[in-house]
Length: 122
Image 1 (tube, rainbow, N blue to C red):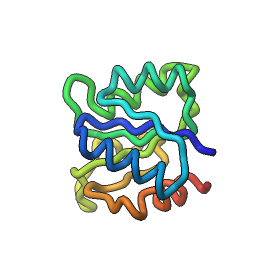
Image 2 (image 1 turned 90 degrees about the horizontal axis):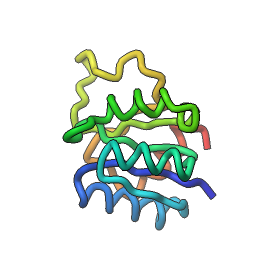
Image 3 (image 1 turned 45 degrees about the vertical axis):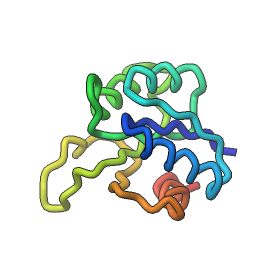
Image 4 (image 1 turned 180 degrees about the vertical axis):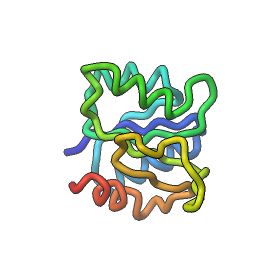
Protein backbone atom coordinates (compact mmCIF):
# COMPACT_ATOMS: atom_id res chain seq x y z
CA UNK A 1 0.00 0.00 0.00
CA UNK A 2 1.49 3.35 -1.01
CA UNK A 3 2.46 5.87 1.66
CA UNK A 4 2.02 9.47 0.51
CA UNK A 5 3.03 12.68 2.27
CA UNK A 6 0.67 15.61 1.66
CA UNK A 7 2.21 19.04 2.34
CA UNK A 8 0.01 22.14 2.39
CA UNK A 9 -0.25 25.10 4.76
CA UNK A 10 -4.04 25.27 4.23
CA UNK A 11 -5.64 22.92 6.77
CA UNK A 12 -8.78 22.30 4.72
CA UNK A 13 -6.92 21.48 1.49
CA UNK A 14 -4.53 19.20 3.38
CA UNK A 15 -7.42 17.38 5.07
CA UNK A 16 -9.40 16.99 1.83
CA UNK A 17 -6.35 15.60 0.04
CA UNK A 18 -5.62 13.22 2.92
CA UNK A 19 -9.20 11.93 3.09
CA UNK A 20 -9.36 11.61 -0.68
CA UNK A 21 -6.17 9.55 -0.92
CA UNK A 22 -7.14 7.38 2.05
CA UNK A 23 -10.81 6.76 1.24
CA UNK A 24 -10.78 6.81 -2.57
CA UNK A 25 -7.21 5.64 -3.18
CA UNK A 26 -6.94 3.28 -0.22
CA UNK A 27 -3.48 4.65 0.59
CA UNK A 28 -1.74 5.55 3.81
CA UNK A 29 -1.25 9.31 4.12
CA UNK A 30 0.97 11.50 6.27
CA UNK A 31 0.29 15.23 6.44
CA UNK A 32 2.55 18.24 7.01
CA UNK A 33 1.55 21.89 7.33
CA UNK A 34 4.83 23.32 6.06
CA UNK A 35 8.26 22.71 4.58
CA UNK A 36 10.17 22.02 7.80
CA UNK A 37 7.66 19.42 8.94
CA UNK A 38 7.66 17.89 5.46
CA UNK A 39 11.45 17.48 5.52
CA UNK A 40 11.32 15.78 8.93
CA UNK A 41 8.50 13.41 7.99
CA UNK A 42 9.99 12.54 4.61
CA UNK A 43 13.34 11.64 6.18
CA UNK A 44 11.73 9.64 8.98
CA UNK A 45 8.98 7.77 7.07
CA UNK A 46 10.36 7.65 3.49
CA UNK A 47 7.00 7.94 1.71
CA UNK A 48 6.51 6.56 -1.80
CA UNK A 49 5.53 10.03 -3.05
CA UNK A 50 5.05 13.62 -1.87
CA UNK A 51 2.27 16.02 -2.87
CA UNK A 52 3.80 19.43 -2.27
CA UNK A 53 2.04 22.80 -2.25
CA UNK A 54 4.05 25.46 -4.09
CA UNK A 55 2.88 28.58 -2.22
CA UNK A 56 3.59 28.27 1.52
CA UNK A 57 4.90 30.78 4.07
CA UNK A 58 8.41 30.52 5.57
CA UNK A 59 9.66 27.74 3.28
CA UNK A 60 7.81 27.49 -0.04
CA UNK A 61 7.38 24.32 -2.05
CA UNK A 62 10.31 25.00 -4.37
CA UNK A 63 12.73 25.50 -1.46
CA UNK A 64 11.30 22.38 0.21
CA UNK A 65 11.82 20.45 -3.05
CA UNK A 66 15.47 21.55 -3.27
CA UNK A 67 16.08 20.51 0.35
CA UNK A 68 14.44 17.11 -0.28
CA UNK A 69 16.78 16.59 -3.24
CA UNK A 70 19.82 17.64 -1.19
CA UNK A 71 19.18 14.93 1.46
CA UNK A 72 20.28 11.44 0.42
CA UNK A 73 17.44 9.96 2.50
CA UNK A 74 14.76 11.79 0.48
CA UNK A 75 16.32 12.63 -2.88
CA UNK A 76 14.72 9.63 -4.63
CA UNK A 77 11.12 10.32 -3.53
CA UNK A 78 8.90 11.46 -6.43
CA UNK A 79 7.39 14.90 -5.88
CA UNK A 80 4.15 16.17 -7.40
CA UNK A 81 3.57 19.89 -7.05
CA UNK A 82 0.06 21.07 -6.20
CA UNK A 83 -0.65 24.69 -7.07
CA UNK A 84 -3.31 27.24 -7.89
CA UNK A 85 -0.73 29.25 -9.83
CA UNK A 86 -0.70 27.54 -13.20
CA UNK A 87 -0.93 29.27 -16.53
CA UNK A 88 0.04 27.14 -19.49
CA UNK A 89 1.55 30.06 -21.39
CA UNK A 90 3.70 31.37 -18.54
CA UNK A 91 7.16 30.36 -17.39
CA UNK A 92 6.84 28.57 -14.04
CA UNK A 93 9.28 28.46 -11.13
CA UNK A 94 9.32 24.67 -11.41
CA UNK A 95 10.20 24.58 -15.12
CA UNK A 96 13.22 22.33 -15.54
CA UNK A 97 12.93 20.74 -12.08
CA UNK A 98 12.83 16.93 -11.96
CA UNK A 99 9.30 16.73 -10.59
CA UNK A 100 6.83 13.94 -11.33
CA UNK A 101 4.12 16.40 -12.37
CA UNK A 102 1.81 19.24 -11.37
CA UNK A 103 -1.78 18.99 -10.14
CA UNK A 104 -3.76 22.25 -10.28
CA UNK A 105 -5.90 23.52 -7.43
CA UNK A 106 -8.72 23.17 -6.93
CA UNK A 107 -8.44 19.43 -7.49
CA UNK A 108 -11.30 16.94 -7.59
CA UNK A 109 -11.12 14.76 -4.44
CA UNK A 110 -12.79 11.89 -6.30
CA UNK A 111 -10.05 11.75 -8.95
CA UNK A 112 -6.97 12.90 -6.98
CA UNK A 113 -5.66 9.37 -6.37
CA UNK A 114 -6.17 8.56 -10.06
CA UNK A 115 -4.24 11.70 -11.07
CA UNK A 116 -1.36 10.81 -8.72
CA UNK A 117 -1.31 7.21 -9.98
CA UNK A 118 -1.19 8.40 -13.59
CA UNK A 119 1.70 10.80 -12.94
CA UNK A 120 3.70 8.12 -11.09
CA UNK A 121 2.78 5.16 -13.33
CA UNK A 122 1.32 3.27 -10.35
